[in-house]
Image 1 (cartoon, rainbow, N blue to C red):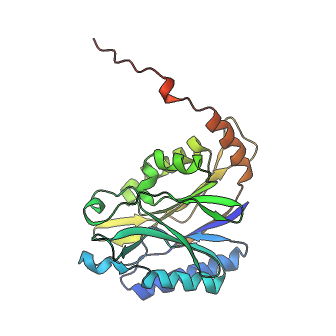
Image 2: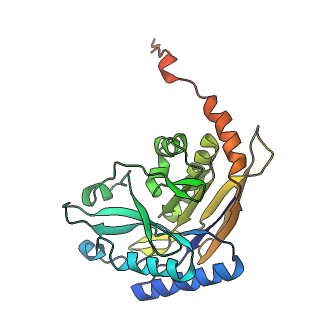
Image 3: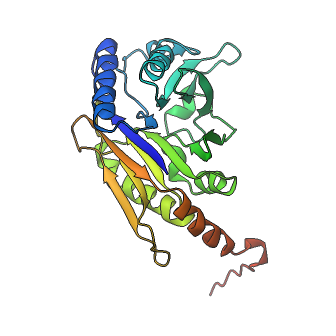
Length: 272
């Protein structure tokens, strides 16, 4: 079992206010759920400046240091959400999520692999998928658009991930599609998914949160039954669940063994 949470703060125009809101929500979460082990932040939780260059931080900058201190102070593992950071050896910045342990120490980071529309112009795309470990549980971090393609969640699953975390920034008009993606990834890989969405307004776009923890009801193999817990829609808050890891492992072994080798399938183009 692993005790997980999504923290869903509202994006404010003042960065310090964003920091205060995250700390407030984390304290409330841990007061209600003292056993929470790891919390995930959304893809975007800081204000957006019209001058794009003002949104980039130095590598391991202010936002990173804030989350490190928060993890250390509250003795909880935290996924930082997506930080836009510049790195000295590259012309373009990166979108990256850090994994910070409960002592405030960085374990590693995951760069966004699939860049969304405008992001391709301004950011570097990652080309490494990391599998992290918390105690005996392995997990991957797939940032937002990385979940829209079946290949990345499947690769994470085949290389041993027990759970997928997804810091996300989904506009309100994309919420329905997003929910379908998340459930499909959970079902096709028989793997729990923790997806934390942004809340607030960025330029003309509205983000409504509704973060989700998707797992499985134990005992239902065929068909399996999804268990979905959600954070508020349109309001700040959090969602917590105690996620069973062992049961999906059994389902996943069976599911992956049922895969057909596509190299053994002949494709015919039948045209009249």
